[in-house]
Structures are given as structure tokens and as C-alpha cells.
Length: 410
Image (cartoon, rainbow, N blue to C red; front, side):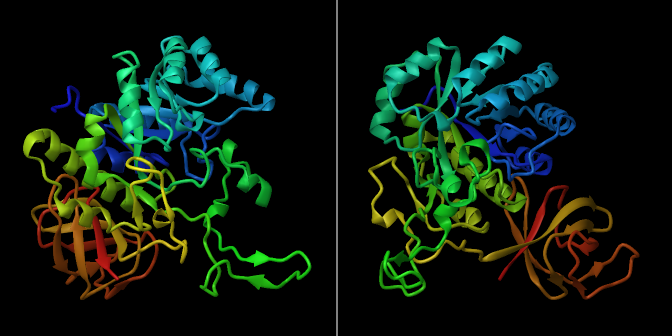
């Protein structure tokens, strides 16, 4: 079955730099938070001036911008949020991602033509609720992560044709109901539902018996403890056809707190997979190179979450909460001179003459070269670049461009 509308690739933009990277590497839309009222308070987020710059950058390239205001507001939040909305009401935002009904009402009052997308935090899991939100003026539902394909198909069949479904396809999974978690509040008094989650689900746990304080018993045989709440990362890049056929119009990548290397790798890989599917749906076969490209960035082991079945113990990682980091992101290209073949590169991790580096760029195949020439800002040849964000001049074997990235295998 050929989908009527091409699926949107929606990428995280934790700050202005990540927004630009997501746009350049192929996102159709980006989502980001302002300085307040977003559930990723630990991300860089953006000032009003940065949002204006980011929106202009994205719109010039045909990319949409969605502002996340998905906290569950307390009384004390209403007045500052009202003032904030008045400050941004004239921005050319394409939609607001919201979970709190009162905030939806407030946005509609201050910005009557605003497009509203219901955040996954609202835990939308059935067609009756979807139809309720449609009557409230919601254009798009970001489905709860706890939905199977069978349930998504039924929702799609029983909601208005012009209501859209968005779903997370990649990223961290919460051990809670679509992020509605109280564990961070309980453990460290940081409210996950107001943007300050400390991720205690990734911590190491052991069992303590009430009458034996200080005696820690492993819950399983690993003496280091057990990560009983530690989910694998969601990854649906091998299942683009099923997503499209279920009526998902926007494939969302989680990760506003991740690095620009993560954003570039994920967006580039999903872009290629989605484009290949829509180019020839009938004969589409997943290209394993997309998985190889994606896994250059740090990641945990993968799961398909709830899409095909209820998760089991095979969707948990009981051994470690650490990421797999096979590659080191070493530099970001700031400019390139095609006449000399030299690139100006901002260092992100240590590079040494003789390193084998891989060069990644938007919408191109990566290539490998040996690092043979490197100069500091004074034009002096150097053997090593150990200083964070050091500006370098590097000889490139092939043409590159702004936003290309250098990395090396560890």
C-alpha cells in the first residue's frame, strides 16, 4: 500500500546549533524548548533571539519548527507562561507541542491561529480520547509510547481524516507511562513533569533488608548490582513501511539533550531509509548501511518497544546503563577552501596526526582518510589537537562543506 502523504522526519533541537545540524542533515521539522516550560530543562534550549534565528534558518530551507511547552503547570507557572506567550506570539512557529489542557486553552486564547500538537506526556491511547482532543482544536496527536501497531491502525480508522498521528521512532524509553514519572521527585526532589528529571531509572540498584542496613544484596547474579529499570533504546529504522502503513505522518526522534554528532547521525540515517521507502514502496528493502551510520553515535542496545508486542525482559538491559561508544566525534567543519583543499575545523575531541578519520556529511556517503596535515590558528603545524573547540586547519582528501563532521573509531 502506497501512503498518501510522505512521512515527516521530526528531529530534536536542544539548542540552536543542534537545530541547524538537524536541518542541514535532512529533518523535515524540528522541535525545541524555550528557556522555560519544556520537559528538557537540562537541554540548552533557546532564548527568544535564538528561536528567531533558528526559525529563520529552518524556514529558509523548508523545515518546520515546533515549540515544546509540555510541562504540567502548577498555579505559579500560569502568570510567567502568560507573559512568555505574549512575547513570542508573533513568531512564525509552525506548532506548539502541549500536554496540559489549561495551557492549550491559554495558547489558543493568546495565539488564536496556533496549531496545537498533543504531547506524548498526555498519554493518548485510544480513539475516543483522540476525538475529544480534536474537538478541542488539536491538529496532531503525539501517540503514547505504549501503543501497538494494531491499536494505531484502529485509532487511524476512527478519527477525522485531517487529524494527524505522530509517534516516537527512536530514543530513550522511560520506565513509566510515556514519561509520567515520579521516581525523580521521590529520589532527588527533581520534578520530571516540570523538566528536571535526574534519570534515576538508569541508576544501579541492589536489595537491602530492613533489619540489615548497609548490607546490599544483588537482585541477580551480577555482583555489581542490577539496572532493574533500565530499558533499551527504541529503534524503528528497520520498520519504516509498518510506520507509514499505520498512518504515522511524523516519525519523531528523541534526544534534545544528545550531542550534535548524535543528531546528525540519526537524522541522516532515518532520512535515507525514509526516502528509499517512498521512492519505491513496493520493492523496498532496508539498507543495513543506515544502521551502521546510525550506530556511530553513542547508543544503548535497541528494542522496538511496544509496536509489535508488550515489552519483555529481552527489552531491558540488566547489566549496565552505559552507552556503547565505538566512535569519537573529533571535529566540526566550519568552512572549506576548494582551491587549497583545506578545511577550517572546530575540534571536539583529541586528534593526532596519523589518525584514521571518517568524514560524514549531509546527504553524501562518508569517506575515510588519514590525518596528514594539521595547523593551529597561527598557521603552525601541529602533531596533536588536545584542546576543546580549538580551531584547526586540516588538509582534506575530498571536498567537504560547512557542518561536515570528523570522527574516528576508538
